[in-house]
Amino acid sequence: TGHELKSDDYYATVQGLSHSPTGKLASFTNFTSSRWFLWDKEHWSTIQQFDNTIEGQYTTSTAISPDETSVLVAHTDGTVRIWDLSRQGVVKQWNRDNQPVNGVDVSPDGDHLASAYNDGQVDIWDLDTG
Image (spheres, rainbow, N blue to C red):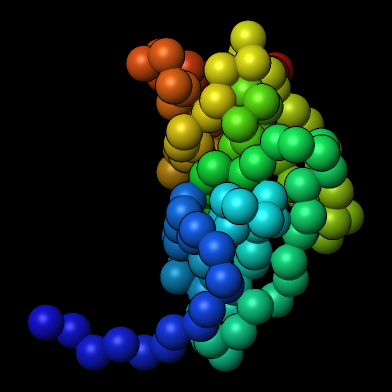
C-alpha cells in the first residue's frame, strides 16, 4: 500500500487523469461540471481551471503533450481539442461523427494523437496535418 500525498474534493465525477512526461503536471476532467483542470504536482495545487466552450457537451479525458505546452481534451460531442497553455485557448481540433470520445492520448514523440470512441473505434491522427 502507498501513502496518500494529497487529496482534493472537486465535488463531481473526476476522470481522464493524465500526468506529464516529467511528472510536474497533471490534468483531469470534472465530467458533470464540464471543466478540466491543470494541476502543479510540485506544489500540489490547481494551476488553472478551464471551462468547456460548448454548452451541453462534457469533457471526458485529457492528455498532456510531451513538451508540456499543450493539453489534448476529449469531449462527448466527438471533438478532441488541443489547448495551448501559453495562449490559453484552442489551437486545433478534430471531430468524428458526433461519437463521444472516451479517451485520448498523445504519442511520446508528440507527433500522433489516439482517440477512443463509444462505438469501439480507435483513431490515430497526425498532429501536424490533422
